[in-house]
Length: 122
Image (cartoon, rainbow, N blue to C red; front, side):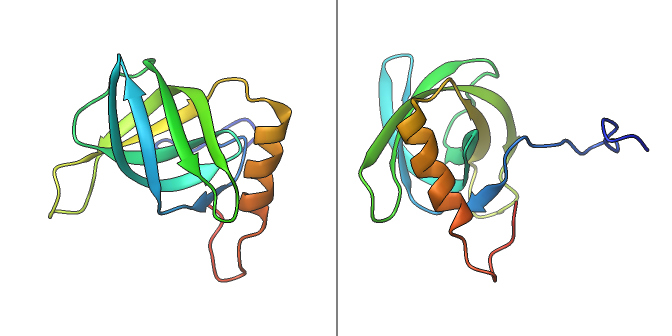
């Protein structure tokens, strides 16, 4: 299989992600809410949301990396799926950050690369 071929049902990420359980502010079409994030990477993140946000929708997310200041970035919804947890009706949205200032990108990269050995690379 060539490096560009990915088995059906899988996809390649450009950047590794780290488990990231924290609060994230989400601004969608002028409506703001706070929800829970699940993963974070240099290129994007995923979070839970009560309602379906259509793919390709541009949003603004605000979050805090531990021991650092707030980060607020524009992003685009790339995918969504129902949360497998039967206790919730939330939807997991995967987003891709739109071009980030280099400082923000470095802060996120430093956080993701500082994961412990016990944490999996996602």
